[in-house]
Length: 120
Image 1: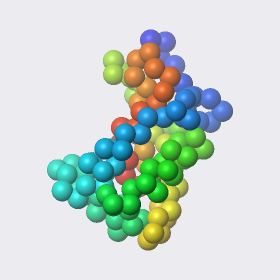
Image 2: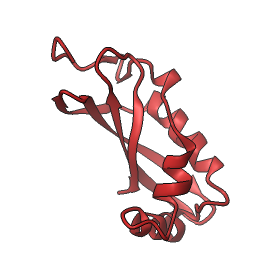
Image 3: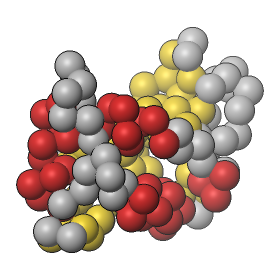
Image 4: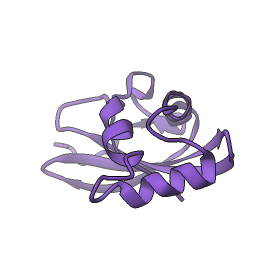
């Protein structure tokens, strides 16, 4: 980001109501037990919360709501953008846990994009 300021407003990310949450981040990565990187995350999501590729909609909804209602923690800023972490309480068919989410504002954008998520 040009001025090195991290975009937040009233304890949430600016543009959180328009946050980009590509469903593939859930179905093909974080909840895919066969993914080379996301496989371990998928097993934890299933065992701790009961979420998997077939029922990810409840998790997606809670992440979209949670990014608007939980305090972001600033991360690094580089040529790719400004990063934040937002911890979101999530409940699922098997229980509840904190899900740590990573977000980035690409240069010139005021809309955060989900980059990662995992059970904390």
